[in-house]
Length: 232
Image (cartoon, rainbow, N blue to C red; front, side):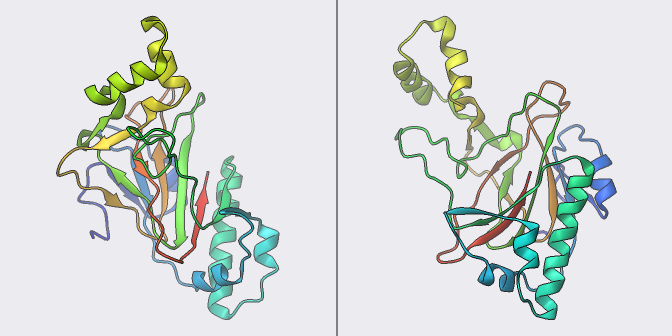
């Protein structure tokens, strides 16, 4: 895996939080990475946190209540600092302890859960921020290596059968049920793993966005290993 990500036109690499939030997406670049090597024992934090559901939100108070070693404390300080930086920026960061996300098993011909390649959509100008501190990390995919699932003929036909309404309302139906957000990797596509420790900013589909939204997916979790993920 390329540790600098700089070989990928899709990715801008920066070295400070200020650069992360102030660098403009342009051309095919729709992901920006604050590239960093984090010290600290994030596994120790995960081992002490209590999983209440498959996804448990962890508050700063929860972190501060942990009795940690020097390395564990270093990891805690990094997480708290990231949360503060994003909060001061005006974002609403959430720290999640994850066993797994819900799977979408309702339709056998199209998946619309976060394990499927997808883009995020927002009615307002915003971006997605994420950082994996522990466990498997997300993947992104260059836009030219993916195909919107609703444009794949056999999937589109089945969605039309499911819609069972006027043709004029079909596109609205696709948006209302988020089918249009999901993508299929083309043959020989090469997903890029975001790795742990880096803080990422991904372009979202919204009216003022100048670039294509970033296609990404949640990883299949490593067996028995929880993920610790910051996202907003």
